[in-house]
Length: 85
Image (cartoon, rainbow, N blue to C red; front, side, top):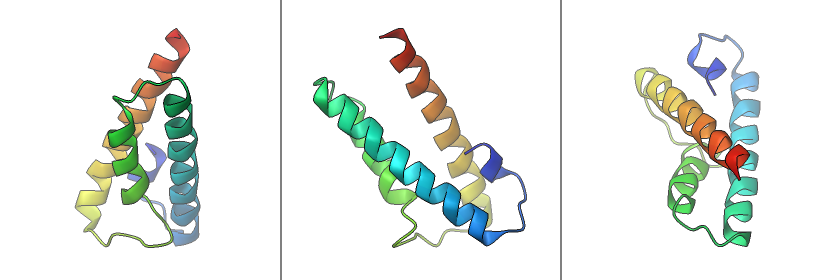
């Protein structure tokens, strides 16, 4: 997601990146649900909905830059939490 904040000319690449984010969010939601840790699931659902490539949100470029950076930091934090388990 941090790469998405950079100016990349290819819209297909950004669509692929959104799909990977959607898939990753779904897998992590399933994992947290299976271990009965429900606190992070609502945040991941927001990411899943926001980065949905099938029914996309049309936000301004400036908003997407911040959304991409926030999502990148959030996934980094979630990865750190999962590694500690």
